[in-house]
Length: 611
Image (cartoon, rainbow, N blue to C red; front, top):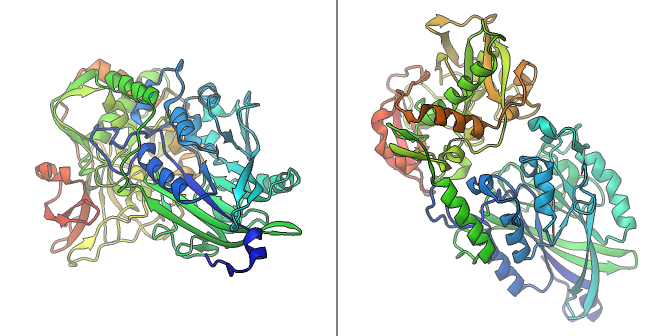
C-alpha cells in the first residue's frame, strides 16, 4: 500500500493501518499431521497456521483474526469427541485468540444440538447473517461488531468499530435434509443488502463479509452457492473472506474474469482472500483507513495469502492434546481384516478397491432396506474416491495395507458425513451421470505423446463410478460437461458400451441407485441430474455408519477388485497422470500399461500411460 507523506502530521493521525487475518475450512484439523495416517504433515492444522498468526501479531499493532467456517467437522477425530468436554477446535481457537467467525455447511453435520453445544464455549462472536438456527439466541448473531482500540500512524489510540457479517451456503439444508426443521437459510446477497444499513446504524465504521462461499459470477442469482463476487459488488462491504471450495485467492486457482482479479486479490475492487483449507494458508488483508468528517474510509488496500507449510507448528492446549490422544486410541480399534491392499492411487485409472468397498456397503444396506419394495429393479451403487490427491496434495490418498482394518479406516474410506440415499434412475440417467464423471479427463489427441490426462479444475471426489455396470471412456471426444456440472458440449458423448450383466443398457431401463444426500441435492456437479430422480430411500444412516455395519458383518475382506470401466484403446498414444508416490508399489494392479515418469515439484509421482 502507498503511505502518505510521513511529514504530514494531520495525515498520520487520521490514518489507521488495520490488518485482517483469516482462516477457512480448517475442518477440525488441529495438529500438523496427517490425521488419516498419523504421519507429520507440515502446513496442516490450526497448529501450523497459528505460528503465522503469532508472527503477524508480533509485527503489526492492529490485528483482528477471523474464521470463515467449516471448523467443527472433517477430521477423523470428530467422530470421537466426548460431548461432555469442550470441543477441541473451539478450545484451540479460543487459545489462538480469534475475534469472530461464521459457520460453513459442515458445521451442522452432526445436528443443531451438537453445533450449539460446541459454540457455547466460544470466546469469540459467531455471525450468521443469512440464516437462523432454532435455539441459537445468545450463541449466534446476525452480525458482530468488534469495538477495538487501534493505534494510528502517529502512535495515538483510535477507536474503531468493525462490523462482521457471515454467510452459509443456501443449499446446506438440501445437502443435509435433517436440518430443514431447525435451520432457515435466506439468499446471501439479499440478506447482506438488508444487513448493511443495520450494521452502519449500529455504528460500524467498516464491514467485513465472511462468505463460506466460492468465488463465482458477479451477477447475483437466487440462492447461489458461490456468492463471494456478487457480495463484493454490494456497496457498503469493505473486505471479504471466501472459502468452501478449498481453493486459494489471490493466486492461480482462479481466472481473471468479470470482477475477479486473482493477481491483486480483489473482487469487484474489494480486497478478498480465500485461505485454502486445513490450515494450509493464512489470509492477510491490509486496509489503510482514513478518518473523514463522514467517518472512516478505505484509503488503500492489499490482499495476500501466506503458506503455513514452512512454519513450525505451535503447541496445542493440553486439554486439546488429551482429547486428540483419546480419539486416536478409539480409532485404532480393529473392525475387520483385509486380504488385499485398499488404496486410491489408481482410482482415476479404473482400479479403486476403496470405492468398491464403500459401494458394496451401500448396495448391501439399500437391498436390506428395500425388501418388498422396488424388488424387481437391479440395485447399483455410486461411489467416488474420498482421498485421491488433487487439491489435497500427494499425501491425500487412501493406502491401507493387508491386515487389520482399524476404525480410522471409516473416515479414510469415507471422509464425508453424508447420509445414504437411493433413487430410481433410467439407463439414460446413468449415461448422463457417467458423462459428468468423465469430464475429469482432458481431451486426448490420438497419436500424441505425454498429454496431460486430468483436468485439475475437477475435484477428484466428484469422480463417480456406478458399480454394477461396465463401460468404456473415449478420451478423443470433448467433455460433455464443465467441471461445475453445466452442459459444455451437447453433442459430446464419451461413454461407450454401457452394459449391465453383459447386456447393453437401454435408455428406458430402470434401476435403483444407492448414493448419498449430497449427490441428490440441488447444485453441484450432479445436482441438476440427481435432484430430479424419484427417491426410493431418503435420508438413511450416515455413510460411515453403513460402512461400519457392513464391515462388522463381513469381518474379512477378500473380494477381487473389479474394474468396471476402461479407456477405449488409443494405439501409439501416451498420457501423463499424477498420483501419490505410493502408487509405485501397485503398478502391477493398474488396468492400463503404465510406467514411472518422474516426480512433480509438488511431490506427486507422474505415470506415463500407454493408451
